[in-house]
Image 1 (cartoon, rainbow, N blue to C red):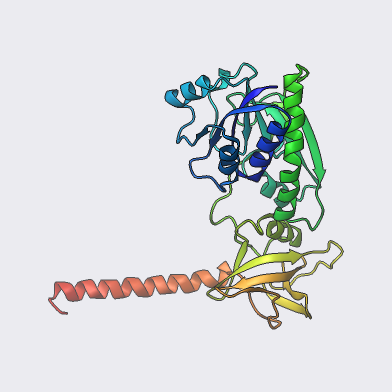
Image 2 (image 1 turned 90 degrees about the vertical axis):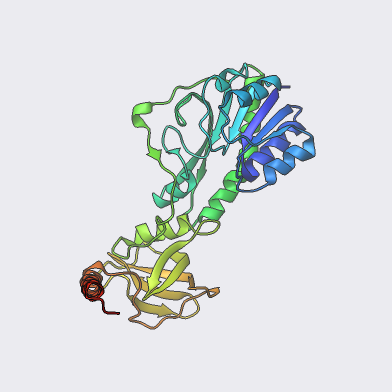
Length: 332
């Protein structure tokens, strides 16, 4: 039995907390994000009677001393959004284990499930590793992989990783408790890093290949923000799309609807082939199967749009200059 402090967020942390308690380990404290994505972990901690903390800066000396006073044998981090530093890292005698949804040393960083899908990976790793002062750089204790299907979406894959996480946590903690945790240093030269995705990253560029567009749509669909484009001045969210690699390659206008399949959606030209849009949301309307006429244009063509924008800018500059001249002459 280990006394542990858990730092984390979300369903994977909450379910892992319950699993460890069921196996006889004692949660002496639970640290949640200041602005958690869900209340599941906090609810789980309260139901188990574990002390609950939500510090703005977990490495601040008073917080470190508070955690030290709880007397944990092991620290556990699952989807916690702050980098852990010394002296916090040396508080538990067994150190801190982090559970990362990436096949380390590849896929260090944030939003790894999204990035793996964006890159069209055929598998994704889930890794238990000791924490050092780097970002996902500590020695590996345990690693499992999941196959990723061609049509699997962010929600699909996230659900499978959430379901797997308690098993990985249970197994890794048992190795530490039994003194059987073998540390495998990472090959840092081979590492890949990914930053968090931000607003604006969701826009589709119809000049890209169909594979890239297919992966982008499935990588940021629900529970993500959805891939974005425009129809004229109206925003469009693309929730579901599909590409078959056997479809033909040909030149035509990217972003133009080139075909319709009754009940399934519309075919939109990409940079090399086309993409079947299966579910979209136009403006504030409901999500639905699109049935736009052939020839409908999506996206923004910079070649045709830039001259028009420059002309509008020149017109506004001329009107502003005229208004300033009238003001100087005392005219209304």
